[in-house]
Every structure is written in structure tokens, then in C-alpha cells.
Image (cartoon, rainbow, N blue to C red; front, side, top):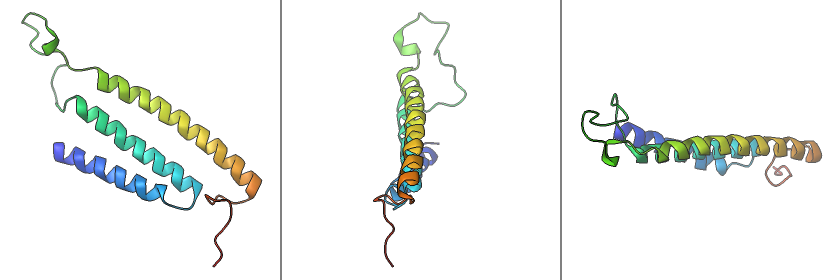
Length: 114
């Protein structure tokens, strides 16, 4: 399970960085989205990788903090999802305004001459 998750994080990061280096603004926005997905998976994996286990450990024993999963990674990922959605929406509005003003979606505002 850890290997699959590590490969998924690496693949998302690689695709995101590759798209960030592209000359079109829409591809840059997609690259930022992929990198944010990779970061979200990484933060979520830092909590604990456990399948089919209860969030409260050893319910029959005296309650201590060691019996509970850490809720901080889940809260951070949820906050990051909301922030990345707002960031993507803002970038799309800026993309549409820039395309309307310049007539192109190239990053520097002009098409390369061939």
C-alpha cells in the first residue's frame, strides 16, 4: 500500500511539474492542481496508513491520547482542498480576462515565432 501511494504522489508531482513548465496558461493551472493533489496525498499519508481500522484504538481500555488517530492531517487536507479550489477558480478568471485582453493564452502574452 505504501509503495502504491508513494508512486501516486511521485506521478502526480512529476506530471504537475511538467505541466507547470508548459507555455500555455491553462496547462500551468492544471499543473498547479496536480501539485496540490500530490501535496494533499502526502499530508494525508503522514497521518497513518491503516485500512479497515477504527479511529479509536482499544475501546475497552482506559482512554488516552495514544488510542486516537491524529485528526490534524485530515483537517489540513480538507483546508487545502478548499484553498486549492478557490485558487483554481481565481486563476481561471484571470486566465479568461488575460485571454480576452491579449487574444492569446500564452504565458508571456505573445505567440512564439516559428
